[in-house]
Length: 416
Image 1 (spheres, rainbow, N blue to C red):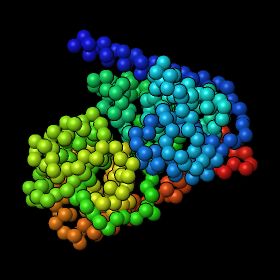
Image 2: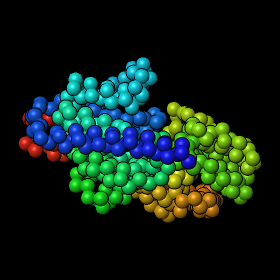
Image 3: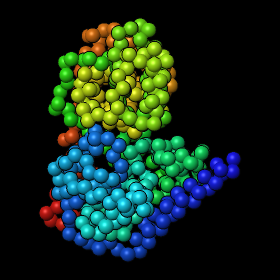
Image 4: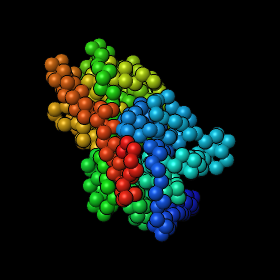
C-alpha cells in the first residue's frame, strides 16, 4: 500500500511538473511577439515508431504534403525515404538522461538549427510536450498528434499504454485538467477520427482539430492465394488483448478443424500466448511469426483480420489489412468505425465478446462469395486513406497551422 502511494506521488509530481513547465513556457511566449521568419519548408517530428509499418503509414504522406523536408527525432534511423532526415540522439545521452530526455535535447537543438515551420509530437507524453516547449521557444508553429485517442488524456492517461501514467493506478482529474490546458496551447491538433474530435470539443479545445488517419499503399494489390484464414497483427501487450484472439481461434476451430491463423508481432505476452495456444489445443493452428518486415505480404495472404483491442486510435494494421483485401472483424473501440462499415466492409464487435468474433468469422469463412463481396468493400474503403489522399489532408493542416501561428500570412514562395 505504501509502495503504491509513493509510486502515485512520484508519478503525479513528475507529470504535474512537466505539464506545468509546458504551460508556463507557452503562456510566457505570448508576451513576446513571434518574430517573422523566412519559411524553411521543414517540419520537425518527434515520437516513437513501434514498427516499420507504423513509420511508413504516418511519414510517407507527410513527406509528400508539400514540405521540403521532414526531420524525425527518433531513437534510431528507420528505412530511408525521400525528403526525410533522421536526427537521432546518441545512445550515451539516452543512457545518461533517459530516452525522453535525450530526444527533448535533440528536438531543441534541431529546432534552433533548422528553424522548422512546424514542430509536431506523437502522444501527449512526452513527445507532444517536447514539441510544444521547443516550438514556443524557437517560434515555430506547434502540433499535437493524439495518436492513442482520448485515453491519453482521460484521468491523466492512467489507462493509456504509457508505462509512466500507468503508475497512477487510477483516474486523476487534476492531471486531466492540466493536460486539457496544455492541449489548448497548440496551434493545431490532429486526431484519428470524429469521436476524438468530439471529445476535445466537449472540453472546449478551440484550436483547430483535424481528422487525419494513417495511410496505406493501395497500389500493391492483393494476393489471390489466401493461405491464412485469420490474422492478428500488433504488439503482444495487454491493451491489444491478444489472448482473446487465441480464444477466438480455439472456438472457431470447433467448426473449422483445418483453420489456419497467424499472429505477427512481439511483446511481453508472446511466450504466454504460445503456452495458451498449446493448452487450448490450437498450437498447430496458429503460426507465431514475431516481428516481420513483410507484414503487408502476410496480410495479402489472409482472409480475415481480427483485432481484439480494448482501445485503439485507427489501427494501421487494420488499414493495411483492408487495403490488402482482408476483411476486418474488430472490436468496436476508438476510431475503428471510421473505416469499417458494419455489415458492408467488415464487422464491429462489442468488446470482449468472443462469441461475436466467432459468429462473424464463420459467416465469412463459410461462403467464398460472401467473403469476396466484403473483401472488395474493405479494399475500396481503405482507398480513402491512400498516401496521396492523406498527404493532401496534411497539406491543408500544416498550412492552416502556420497561418494561425503567423496571421500575417506566409512569405512568397512557400509551398504550404
